[in-house]
Image 1 (cartoon, one colour):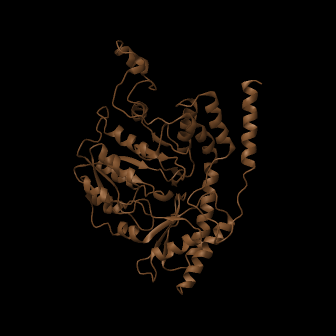
Image 2 (image 1 turned 135 degrees about the vertical axis):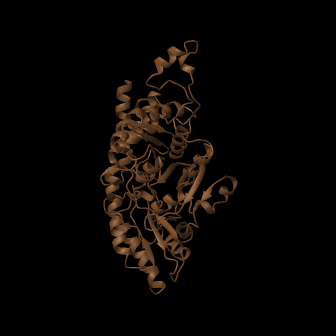
Image 3 (image 1 turned 30 degrees about the horizontal axis):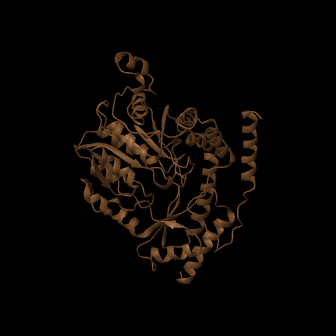
Length: 424
C-alpha cells in the first residue's frame, strides 16, 4: 500500500471516528453547560494527522495559509501567527518598543489600557519598560471608557491598548483621540473575532492588533495567536522577532545577507526576539476553523438574542446588548447583578452551577485590585467605580456553538427558578 493510499484510509477513518461520537442527550438541571466545547471536527483532526505523518510539523506552509486567510478575513494585508494570544500581545508591544521602530514606545512612556481585561494585556506593557495606565470601563459594554481615556492622557502618553472585551467592539471614537494626541493604538481583539463597527472588522483600526485561538475562543488552534497590521515594516519586524530576530522569513533577507556576507544567513540576527513560533499542526487547525467562523458567530448571536430578550424581565440584572452600528460576537454571555439587588452574585452563581451552568468571573476583574500590580509602577485614573462593580457583581457563562435550543431554554428556566425562590 502506498503512502497516498494510507493517507486516504486515515482520512476516511478519521471522518468515521467523529461520526461515531454523537452528542450526549441534554438533561435540564443535570447536564453540564460548559464555558466552551471543542470547535473542531474531522477536517482539522485529519489535517493535523497528515502533518504528523509527513513530519511537516514545524512552522511551514499551513501556517502561511492560515495567516493569509485570516488577514483577508479581517481586512488587513499582513498577519503573523504566533503560539498564543498572550504571545501576540507581547510581540505587538515589543515591535513598538524595538529600537528599529521610529517614534515607538520608550522606557517610561505611558500606555493607557482598561482596568477590566486579561493579565497578558497589561503584562507586556510592563515587560517592555512602559507604564500601564488603568482607566475605567463602561458598565453596559465592559469596554474602555472614551471619556476616561481623555482624562488619562499626559505628555508621557505614547499609546492606547484597547480591548474588545467579551466579543463587544469598543467605541472607535478612540481613533480620533489617538490622532488628536498622536498616539499609537494596539487592538487586543483576542475575544472578538469577526466583531464590527460600521461594517469594519475589529483588528483593522489600530497600528497593530492581536487575536487568540485558544481552546475557549470563537475558533481554535488549541493554542495560537495572531498579530495583524497594515504596516509592512511592523509585519517584517513581527516575523523576525517571533523567531529569535533572525532574517529567515524576511522579504529582504537576501539583501540583508549580502551586507553581512561573513555571517551564515541561516544564523543572521538583525534584532532581538523570542521563540513564539506556532507549529504547522496549529496552522492545520486554522485553515479549516476560519471557514467555520461566521457560522459559529451566527449561533452565538442567536443565543444572545434569546437570552437578552428573556432575561430582561428580571430588573436586578444588567445585561449587554448590541449597540447600533456594531456587530457583537459574544465571546461569553456577561451578567451583572445590580448592587442594590436583594441577592448576591454568589447566591445566583452558586444556584446556576448546581444546575450545571458553568460560570466564571469577568476575566481578571479589576486589574488595579490584583496584588501583582503592587510589584510594578503603574497609574490609575480615578477610583475605577465601574471596574470595582464588575469585580464584585459580574460573571459570565458560555454562549458557544454547542448550545442549542434545549440548553438555551434551560438557562432561562434556571434564572426563573432562582428568581422565584427569592420571590422576585
